[in-house]
Every structure is written in structure tokens, then in C-alpha cells.
Amino acid sequence: MIIKNKWRIAQDDLVARLVLFPTVLLSAVCVYGFIIYTIYISFTGSTIMPIYEWVGFENYEKLWQLRHWHIAVKNMAIFGVLYIGISSILGLMLAILIDLNKLGEIIFRPVFLYPMAISFIVTGTAWKWFLDPGIGLEHIMHLWGFANFQFDWIKNSDFAIYTVVIAAIWQVTGFVMVIFLAGLRAINHTTIESGVVDGASTFQLYTRVIIPQLGPSFLSAFVILGHMAIKSYDLVVALTNGGPGQATALPSTFMYSYTFTRSRMGIGASAAVMMLIAIMLIIVPYIRKQLEEN
Amino acid sequence: MTISETTRSKRFSKFIIVTILSLFAIYFLVPFYVMLVNSLKPLSEIQGGNMLALPRDMSFDYWIKAWKTAQVGVNATGLRPYFFNSVKIVIPAVLLSTLFGSFSGFVLSKWRFKGDNLIFGLILFGCFIPFQIVLIPMARVLGSLGIAGTTSGLVLVHIAYGVGFTTLFFRNTYASLPDEIVQSAQVDGAKFMKIFTSIILPTSAPVIAVTIIWQTTNIWNDFLFGVSFGDARSQPMTVALNNLVQSSTGVKEYNVHFAGAIMAAIPTLIIYIASGRYFVRGLMSGSVKG
Picture 1: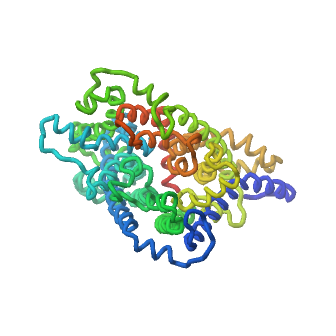
Picture 2: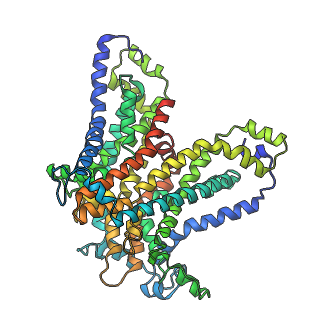
Picture 3: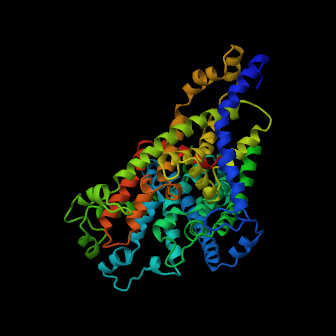
């Protein structure tokens, strides 16, 4: 901006700097200062309290030898792929259907989106009891006469992680739908028009003209869901508490347990650093692209 | 012009679309329905009966128990004190993070200085970090400030990790205001605060609403910070609910758990229903443009 009076620049600059200060200070200390501190701790032999004895990459070597961490990483991969994949497909489908229907926006959108407003702990509690074989879905199906119906995934080490996927998808699909809905509203209609002139069917219009134009929405959905997946914590705690055993451990629950309950802070810190790196791989290119576009 | 008009499709029968959407609506509503009907049933009806059935012997006793007398952790206080802990955390944290964000968003959108974009990028990145990376040092800092295990400590934490989003909301909104508005005010001799309060703030009601709704929802629903930095006297509602549900002593009182879960959900649900449009706007600008 052009500022004409020199004296005024100094005056305004000072006030501008002053009001910017709290935000910059909080970010500098609580984000970047703390990240550096945790990275440092990950290279020390800290156990119950931080100590500053340098041990090099020992914690990282131990981390990648732990079975518990391997389970957490494998679960993260399963959860991440299914969570992003299924909620994107469902979200896109619901967005297309809502876009085609006048009632959609008024009645259905609020219903599909409300889970985003409530806590993961509430979601976890609801699904925990609904999926409980003793009182929930399995029991209901038995009462309805399907005596052989079995759905005990939440108690089964091999399948418990999929119950986390079910609950997480329930919570986030409406959000993904809203992202795609915004994408659909921004589509260039002349391209659809020329498809219609060429005699394409509605299905072809969607698969060849409309969905290919949703690239930016897919990218947004991927970035948001990817970073939400890595940060997932509350839902697992409420739904399965990482169990049965360690069957639904995620990097986030691993970090918490090693740092605060098992008193192996150095290893906990190294797990947190791995999570940060994973998030940076997704987020940093995205932020850079956004800033360049400005 | 909608897509369906442009494609001139009559093949998508309205009936089929509404049927599919209705099935999904049932899927999204069932968990809430289950919570609601079972919070009003005696335990025998839940264990012996069908979770989807309406209560035969309806009673609000389980709500009263969840609120006033249920065992949460070691104390039989019910969820009430924790509900008010959450209120005590949310109100100051939302107001202060919104205030800081409106200032920094304005400066970063209309003041050009060296490295302004970099600073914004760095602040923005703070929105996305996995909070596990800050738990250890934050616990130390809160301890040395003497506010570990207090609601004030949690207020500070939520401000620190809220200003990124609030800055983002305000910056994106103010960036779309024409620069000339600010420039002509400067030519007339108005100073920073004068420009901010008399020109910028009067146009800001929508973005303030979006920010307050976003922050209230996020902070009310926080669990990780609450469980890491709260103690028995300062824990928020989400942590207390989890303690109530996970406590393994005695009979599992599903009805009390469901009543507690609804109590934890009510404040943000009311905000959502009352302000759906602003909630959606917050979701979009908090994530898509981010």
C-alpha cells in the first residue's frame, strides 16, 4: 500500500507491529520453539523427566524396532487409506446427489454435516456401544431373527481398526461432501454444454467432463483428510482405547503412552517427530502453493 | 444455472435420488437416535431389549444422574463441574484468540513489509501441526508458570494454537476488501486504530461470527489438551465424559453414558443448528483455502 506521509508510516508501523506481536510471539514460542525443544528431547535419554544428555539417533533406532510402533504405523496406513478413500467416494457421491436435488441443500446437507460439530469422544461413545456385540448391532440382528449374524469387530484384534474407520467416516463424510459441493458449484458450464451437444449421456458427462474438473476439490480433500488421519487420537481413545491389546494403536496413542504412562519420553518425542514429518510432507507443499497463488 | 439443468438429464429419477439420500440420512442419524432413546431407558431395557426400540419405561433419572451424581474418575460429582470447566475455558480462549486474529489478520492483509508472506505461512503451518509435538514442552512451561492443571493454563494453550486459524480467517476476509478504503482513510489522516475500529470492524460481523463459531466448536470439543494439561478440578467436559464411560468399576450404566454424551454434544449442536451457514463457511475457509 502507498503511504504518503513519512511520519505517519512510523506511527502506524509501530501500532501495526504491536498488534501483530501477540500472534507472532505465540507462534514463535508455542509452535516453533516447542518443535525445536521436542526434536532436541528426541535425541536425549529422557525418561520420566526431560534430561539433556545427548544420545544421537538411539531413540529412533529403538522406535523402529518396537513391535508396538510397527502396529501403530501399519494401523495408520490401513486407517489412512480407507478413511481418505471411502470418505472421498461417499462425499463426492452425496455432493452430486445433493446438487441434483432442490431438497438436498435444505434438508439433507445439515443432516449429513452435523457429526462434524460434535466431539470425537461423543462419536466414540455412541459407536462403542452401538458396535458392542452384547447390546448393539449384533444383538439387534439376533432379536430380528438373524441368529447367525456376527459383528464382533470391536472386540476382535484383527478387525478392531476397521471399526475406527467406520466411526471416523461417519464423522467426516459430510465435510468432504461440502468440499465437493463447492467444487461442483464452480464448474464451467460451457464445457458441459458442449458435451451435451456432442450427445454424451449424463453418466458420461459426469465421468468425462464434470468429475475431471474437480481436481482442486480432490486435492483439498486429500490434504485435509490426510492431516486429520495422522492427528487422529480422541476417536480411538473413546472407541477402543487402543485395544484390544494394542490392536488399534496409532502413532498418536503410541506417543502419549510412551511419554506419559511408560516414562520413556525420548522415544515418545521421536514418535512425535515422525508424526510431524508425515504432516509436513502433506501440508508444506500445499501451503506453498496457496501462498504463491496469492 | 444448475448442473442438472445444463446436462438436461431426466434420467436421474427424483425418486431414486431422494431414496438414496434418505438412506444416508438414516445412517447419519442412527447414532444420535441410539444415544437419545437409550439415555431415557432403564438398564434392563438396554441389555435385554433392542437398542433401536423406543423406551417403554421412560425416565429422566439417568440424565440427572449423569449431571449430578455419576462417578467421574474418583469423585461422584456428575458431569456438572466439568461442563462449567469447559465454559470457563471456552469463553476467554475464544474471545482473546479472535481479538488477536483480527489484528494480525488485518496487518497481514493490508500492510506490506519484508517477509510478510513468510510470517503468514509460518503462522498458518501452526494450524496443522500434530499437537503431540508440543505436549512435552507445553507441560514444562505451564508448570513453570504455575498454571499446570488449571483452566487458565488450558485457556493459554487454546489461544496459542487458535491464533493460527483466527489469523487465517481474518486475513482472507480482509484481503478481499479494496486497498483504496484503507488508503483514502490514511490520506484523510486516520491512524491505524482509527482505521481499524471505524472502517474495518463495522464490516467484520460475518467473519467474527465465523471465527467465534469455529473456535468455540474446536475448543469445546478438544480432548488432547484437556487430558494432557487438566487435573481433576480443571478437566473439560470431553475428558470427564471419557472418564465416565471408561471407568470399569461396577456395572456399565449405558443409559448414564449416553445421557452424558448428549450433554457434551448439546452446546456445539445448538451452535451448529442456529448458525449452519457460518459453520460451513468456517469449515471451508479453515481448510480449503488453508
